[in-house]
Image 1: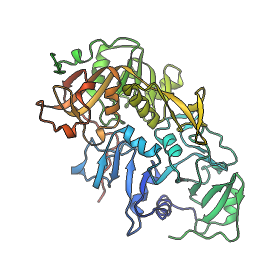
Image 2: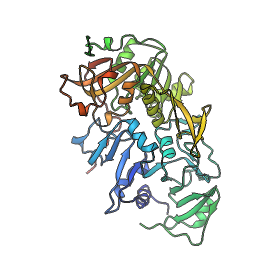
Image 3: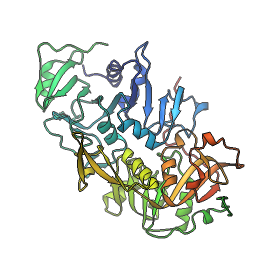
Image 4: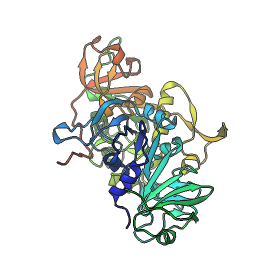
Amino acid sequence: MALSRNQLAQRVAQELNDGDYVNLGIGIPTLVPNFIPDGIEVMLQSENGLLGMGVFPTEENVDADLINAGKQTVTMVKGASLFSSAESFAMIRGGHVDLTVLGAFEVDVNGNIASYMIPGKLIKGMGGAMDLVAGADNIIVTMTHASKYGDSKLLTNCSLPLTGKGCIKKVLTDLAFIEIKNGKFHLLERAPGVSVEEIIKLTEGELVINGDVPEMQF
Amino acid sequence: MAGLDKLVTSYEAAMAGLEDNMTVISGGFGLCGIPENLIQEIYHKETKGLTIVSNNCGIEEYGLGILLSKRQIKKMVASYVGENGEFERQLMANELEVELTPQGTLAEKIRAGGAGIPAFYTATGVGTLVAEGKHHKIYNDREYILEEAIVGDFAIVKAWKADRHGNLVYRKTARNFNPMVATAGKITVVEVEELVEVGELDPDEIHTPGIYVDRLIVGTFEKRIEQRTVLTA
């Protein structure tokens, strides 16, 4: 079965290392904090100028001056710090953020990512995504494997305007965990109950399968 | 106003000298930390043909979005313009020019503008539409593009506390772009929630030194929340 949004977040959380500074994008990535494994200490960076983002506030603690990059009201954890947007992107561009998790419309075999614009249809802007993919070494893209019409989002060449070129090495979809190297997708894990054949069928770009592909463990 | 005293007492005086076709840089992220009353004043002045530089363009009836209803904006330089139907409509109808700029590049363009740096290289945007027509250069085997600084005819800023000299303290994530914006205006106008006596702010805690500030006004703020999200029991 395809992973639920929560399972996607849970699988991403398994990639966290103790002591990581992590930037989480909008959508599925915002669910990751719910699944941080015991004994792992991480700090969440929000690009609008907060390191140490906490949970959503209670009604009494809502503060219009304290929001995350998705413009949602949030709280701060102990040890949090606040700074300007320039400082925030110095952290991001300077490679100080250990892990970045963000969504996408398409990813291709060369590690290109398209996530911000559908010409003639959706023009919202890239926000901080271009800075994040250019500045981070360790990026996980989370998205559905195919559109609701069954069109693959893992392509030979991205068809939409790019957010970044050659910067994506790991993709977690609702069907598979995939690594990108040497111009190919490599199937690392499959969602529980999802067959390799199903994944092949919904992957347009070249997919390498090495021996038995394990199921994800939760 | 006299000497180092930057305080003005009307919004009219705060935005005096703003003319058609000028460039205005505004602080704020979403609706957080926006100079909401200074924006209102621009709306009432009906200044037209403006180039607005801001991370976002507000929503339809609040923040910079209100300037769209009177067609006061000619060009918008922003990183994210979603959640505003009128913006999208004017953009699709070619009534509005938009320069989508990555958020970190935007912050740095404004920072550089205020710091007298005309341009800088960055890896952000290489291989994308953002890089088109820009100078490319390789440093240490990596490709970078040249991005130019931004200086505004006016910079409008929201801070939390100030003294009459224009020393500023921001609050929480309402800081965002405001410190850079404060440095990058030929005329920098700041509105604050609270005015304190000169000497009351601990010099170690001042986020923006008064040297950048030309005019200061004390206002009252609605502080609208775009995505009120609370813990559900």
